[in-house]
Image (cartoon, rainbow, N blue to C red; front, side, top):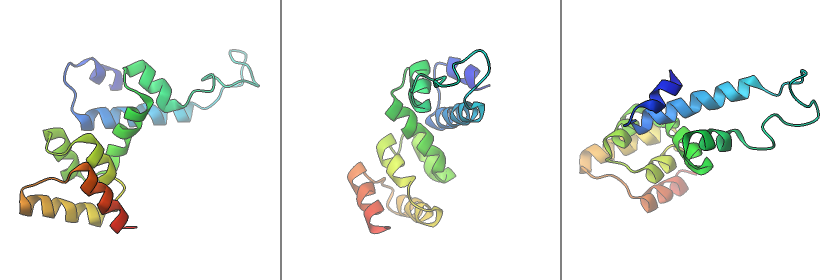
Length: 130
């Protein structure tokens, strides 16, 4: 299912985020093999991080893969704003570090003011909530 989603020409950021997360979890569950097909002293991934491997397979950078995966920590309303293009990727990633109550407060403010936060505003938001 994950692979077939990547074959579509237009994929929503939320779909890509959850697909990457599923791939990451599957690769981590796989673990290191110590049977005859791999060197028991070496790493099967040749020292590459999982996000880097996923990025190489999908055409995104390791950083971008991490950003997409981070989107899975957003409340559904914020994730919908990302899918609609109302919130860009970087501000959304910053908002994903807020707890659920704070994210819901942001949703309320967006609805109230009919405006979405910039990247700089989301960074300030994270600092305030530390």
